[in-house]
Every structure is written in C-alpha cells, then in structure tokens.
Amino acid sequence: MDINKKLKITFFGTSEFAVNILNELKTSGACLSGRQGLTSPLISLNLIVTAPDKPAGRKLVITSPPIKIWADKNNIPTLQPEKLDEKFINKLKSQDWDLFIVSAYGKIIPQSILNLPKYGTLNVHPSLLPKYRGATPIHSAILAGERETGVSIILLDEKMDHGLIVAQEKITLWKNSLDEMPTESQLEKTLAQVSEKLLGSLASKWIKGEIKAVEQDHNQATFCKKLKSDDALIDLDGNAKENFLKIQAFDKWPKAHFFQNEKRMIIKKARLENDELIIDRVVPEGGQETDYSNLLK
Image (tube, rainbow, N blue to C red; front, top):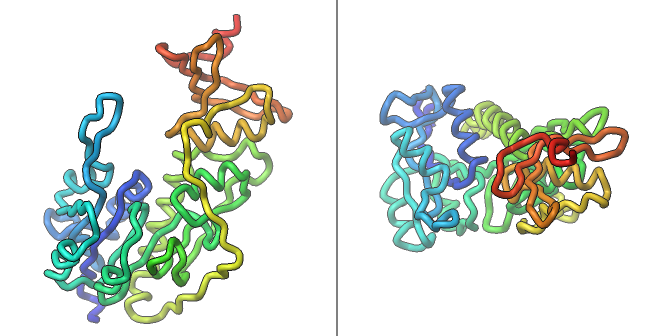
C-alpha cells in the first residue's frame, strides 16, 4: 500500500472507553473522518459500528450508546446492527477496507468479518493480556490492587481477547501507597491516552509489515467477572483497603455505597490513612453531596 494514502478504517465500539480513545485521536489529529475537516495524513475514520439504541434510566428512555452520540457530533456515519449476520456483512462488503479497529464493542465478532479488511482487525484492550480478559479489566485491576496495568493491541480472532499481541504498554497505578490508586474514571482516561499513542505509533509499521505479532501465553490467562450492583456495597466494618479499592473502582457504576439509618449513602470521595478508611464526601439518598462529617454530628 502507498503509505501516503489514507487508511480506510471502520471502528467498532460502544462504551465510554471507546469514546475516550476517539477523543484522544481527535485531539492529537491522528484520525478522523473525511467528511468535515477531521483529517489525518495517515488515517480516515469512515464508519463506526456500535450497539443498537436501548432503554436506559428509570423511565427507560431509548438512548443511543456513547459512541453513537460522539459519531453524530463528529459527522461520522454509523451502523447499529442487532446481529452480525449476512445482511450486515454485505453492507461492509460494499466497500473495500484497509483496517478494522475494535475497542469495548461488546459483541464477539465472527471471523468472516474480521477477515474483511486488507490489514486485519486490531483490538485495543485495557489490560496486559493475557491478564484480565473480558469486559471489566479496568475495574478488575483496581479491585485487585495491582501496581501496574496497561494496554494491549492484538490481532483479533473469534475467541475473547485471545489473539496475537501486536503491541503492549505498561503504566504504574501506584508507587508508594495504595492510596495513590486512581478511580475507574481516571484510569479509563489514562488508558485511552496510552491507546491513542500506541495506535498512532504502530499503524504505519503494521501496514508495512514491520511488526511481528506474538502468541499470548494462554496458560497465564485470567478472566474478569461481570459486575453487579451489589458488588459496590461497602461494609464499613470490613477490610479498609478492600473497601477503598471498591470506592475507586466503582466511581461511575454501580457506585460504592453503604446504608446508614436505612438510607443509601453513595461515597464520592474517600482515602486511606494509617490503614483506616476515611470517608470524606457522600451523597445521601434523596439529598445533595456533602461532607460525611456533617452527618456524624
């Protein structure tokens, strides 16, 4: 391929993590659509594939996934297939693609789709694979108190987070004290920045065949569990470090909480001090965010 020609790319993604990656690409100028000036010397993001709209919130209002909202704002066309079936495949086949990029899409993509682009399908996964395969690697790393995590870019196959490793980059979560552990929101943003830099640095090398993908050590694979609302319940008499890690991991959803006088208290900010959990800010059920000390007077 002429490296002066833009890569024609489809991005598969759904969640906020995928949006964060695209925001980083947009900010850096590494990648955007050929429609309205969001250009790059190397990459043209021509299509986004994401999940269908679905009911959300207490009133079950039909809501687009975060990346669909982002795509609309940036004038990038989208497809939202219910099933990755022959009808959908034929739509993709109507154009010639150089590369598919997948991150936090939420569905297993069949090999017949993965094989469509000339240079294959790359997956951006926010862990150091084969560790933390699955849908919740960011939460899982925080809950385990890991000192480091990172981003893996793999050549995607049909098995979950199983493909050949194209590139990895590590980051440190905390150096001196567990109290330095970031929240899930903070870590998600950091890993999106790392992902964008990795994608930008490897794209031209990948299409020129300068990168050799390597097999994962599948014997070392670990897997994330599916999150439930009850996972974020805090026992104030429990282990302080475990409680702190829950608070950091669940700052977006399902939100770390406890019950006081039969009222649900959402923890907004807490810290470890001499191995003791100090709760600084809470949102009482039906109330406004406040200092937790105000509720103890």
